[in-house]
Amino acid sequence: MGRQFFWILAISACLFGCDHIFAQESPVASAPAAAPAPINDPRTFVEIVTNQGNIVLLLETEKAPISVKNFLDYVEKGHYEGTIFHRVIKDFMIQGGGFDVKSPGREKRTGAGIKNEAGNGLSNQRYTVAMARTGDPNSATAQFFINTSNNNFLDRKNSPDGFGYAVFGKVVKGIEVVDRIASVPVKPSANGAPGDGPSEPVTPVVIQKIQIVVPVASVPVQQ
Figure 1 (cartoon, one colour):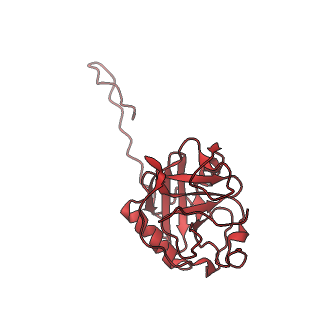
Figure 2 (cartoon, rainbow, N blue to C red; figure 1 turned 60 degrees about the vertical axis):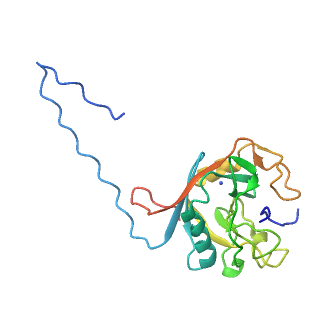
Figure 3 (tube, rainbow, N blue to C red; figure 1 turned 90 degrees about the vertical axis):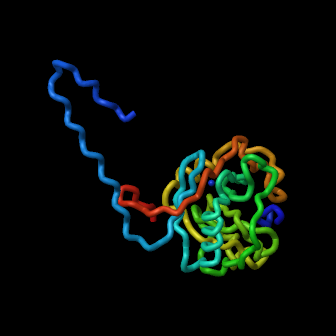
């Protein structure tokens, strides 16, 4: 499948010392801390583990079921391991999930495109995540982008092509990581869209893995 992009106008333990023959009595080892309790939340959360930090997404399983299932299929296959955020445009978005860090000029193989769900009522607001695609509205596969500005013009009702870009989740933890990635130095790229300008991170931003997670009480999600 061809490169995907937006067709628009213009992510020791310290051991106590050895017992001494004449030492005072040994200290009592403290009990290990209890594991944080899971939050009883039926929603689906995934964690994007990157070399810049971790980002947790809440997936919109009800409003974007096709896009969420597609994304999770790629997660379960391990597709995203070793991929990169190859397209970073300041005050717009960060895009990744398609190119391998070992061969950044070659897109990883994917399955068929999915139905465009941009009419689901979700808007491309800052820190939402959406499917990337080619000029074909129903061509989204593995690549996704995180909006770093309010990009209403990517919504179906405002999109120049009349189809828009389907939002399927939002960032609920790790906003500072998104901002960090959005601010990395960039260079000219062959994997962007016409008119992008420099958009490829000088130092690769690597997605080490994406995994389904259960939120816990000690790590509340940002609503």
